[in-house]
Image (cartoon, rainbow, N blue to C red):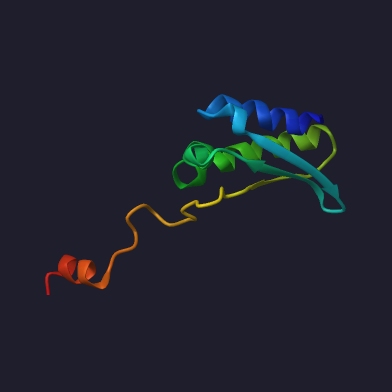
Length: 104
């Protein structure tokens, strides 16, 4: 296992409640290194963080690890099956609920 992959696994397993579900796949191509991360659906919030700040910080650290090894490292976080996507909880309402909120 390469150092960037080891580093990512160590950081993510320390953050999540289900470390046994963490899976990192490493692919190298002409664009650099792509690390694809899969976590338990309940751990997505901890992995991404509020406004994506945790994911941004992890990506920054991976770039530093990559620079030490003369590689460009990118991170892709896979959404688990049945995930919510990028919608905020409670963001969708029926037309009736929206009209009641407007109190028209």
